[in-house]
Length: 286
Image (cartoon, rainbow, N blue to C red; front, side):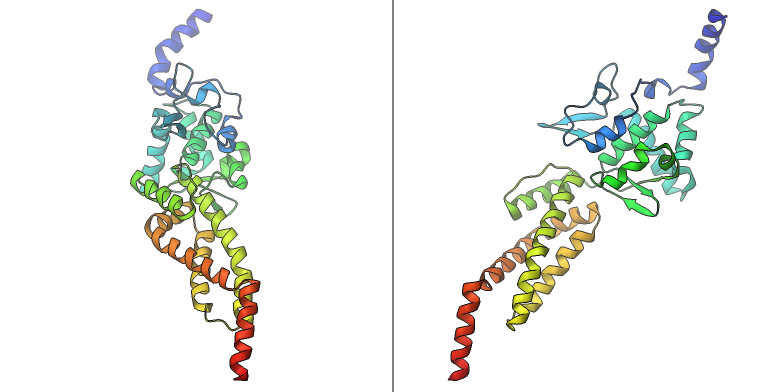
């Protein structure tokens, strides 16, 4: 009986599942969560790298390791998502529908492989995930990981391809961030967006105190501060793509606005305000 079934499988499986070998790997089941939580990608299990047991999901780019959306297995899934999205099909892009397609004839992949592939695409910034009425475009948001760790959430989640940002735009964003802050950041969409949002949050906290002082002393800086607040709020509420476009396209203006805010902040410190109040009193007396 064993020989009979082996012969049957040897005969039928290559025709029924021509792409089975592409995604046939043994997994623990936690790999999708691992790549989303990892601070860097150079210490992951062998499945992520090239080799007989790997899927080439992570590659070396210069001195750093990055998620690879062009691996054969990731490209297979991404091309399908792009096709279905271009047709306007939403139901075919849910986790349940994807599991039916890539787990059925032609592929025969396990659910954990599919979740891992989608997690790599999410980390690479090639797809967005929608779940419970929320749209997630950053893997650094802890709430975005549920569809990759829970079977129920995975089936209900919607996976949408995003237009990739070119390397030249990413490079310009990194250069502008370094020029703006003096710090460096990985040339990765979500990493750049995260540090820019953090900078915007810090600046908004400083801005609140300065605005109170300007208003209390009737100083002529309200308009400049409001313009800066609008820019920071746009960054804070924007998607990762929005942050990249702002930083790449408006880096010079953003640097000038930050420098202008720094001068206003220095001009409204305790000693400066004390001198201003004294001068104002003298003028009124005269």
